[in-house]
Image 1: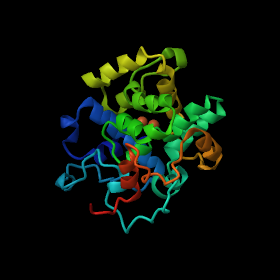
Image 2: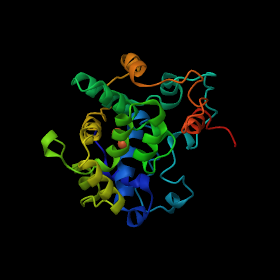
Image 3: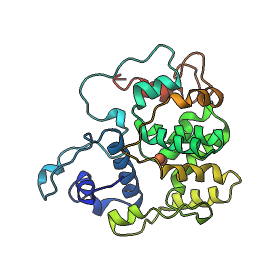
Image 4: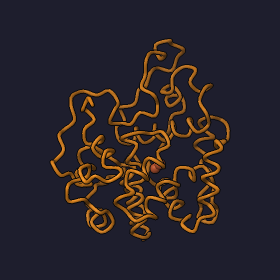
Length: 261
Ligand SMILES: [Fe+2]
Ligand SMILES: [Fe+2]
């Protein structure tokens, strides 16, 4: 994906860069690319100028996509929603996660990696801050432990190279901000922990497939993944959100963004 530096920086607002941490910048860039992929017209694109208009109230950058201003109400979910219902009714078009899982599938990666890729960023619909941790927690009751482990640590691993698998330092960050990414301490700690863990590659493969998942022209759908979901995601019979699991409330919130309480 081609990212126009001026347009991207304009979406951050006047003066934002000076107060953003390196992690904020990294997240802002990734979320911008993902929003562009799903709804090219959606992100705010103010004229590049010094206009004070850009300084008005805005949603915090960590706000999930489902909670951004929009026209109308969300379509109701079925009474006992499945994971596939969430893809169709709440995450769609979900191009980034579908493209990353497609790449894993095409390159014969383990099925658990395909599943992890399919799920790795869906939590961005709910919340963007610390998305690896939120994302892992969201799916933890329903997937193999190393799937949620990989999702948790893909976030801190993104900005660390691993030449052994051909994962280079993301040059896009440097091109956009004119500087190298300097991770905060907690990200560095999480990286070191994951790097030394026997499941390291589960998280690393997610970051690798991510690189192939920003193609504005690739057509993708959930259909090729239905059987994989069936084998790797423990769909609760009560419906996701109603099974009293530790993350059921998160699924209910995704299902019902319009509820006032
Ligand atoms: Fe991610
Ligand atoms: Fe991603």
